[in-house]
Image (cartoon, rainbow, N blue to C red; front, side, top):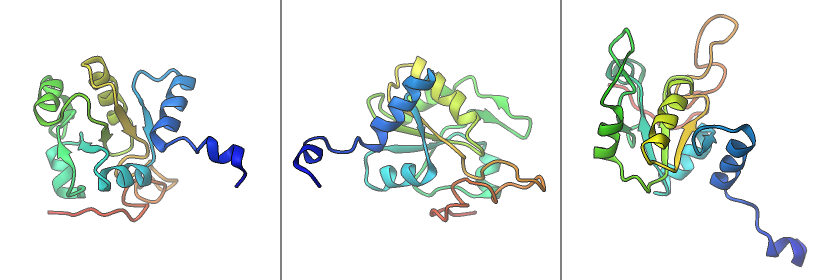
Length: 155
């Protein structure tokens, strides 16, 4: 590596996500892959918050190291009006917060709400826990936490 390159180290994963968020005008700090989210969680640099319902966590599985704050509740996915208060009770606002849902959509909305509430380092975990639907209408074959072989448990 040249001396010039050594003076300018590669930006961190979080800095890269922030830049992509600025470029895309996202209303939250940015999005991270499940692999990057796990590395940050495992190293203690971030708090992983699972925003799926209790039913999803129980029957589909969850990350043992995650904090649970549902964005919506029940099988009808009724929006949780206490989401921000529950998040504030479990996570400090200055923390790097990584929000995880099934596919990355609810967690993006949760990241936006968290940012509006003063969590300025709220990131979405893209792909979510199960990923997008594949051509056969199934999840888990096209991205997501489990697809990448990251640790999880099931009750």
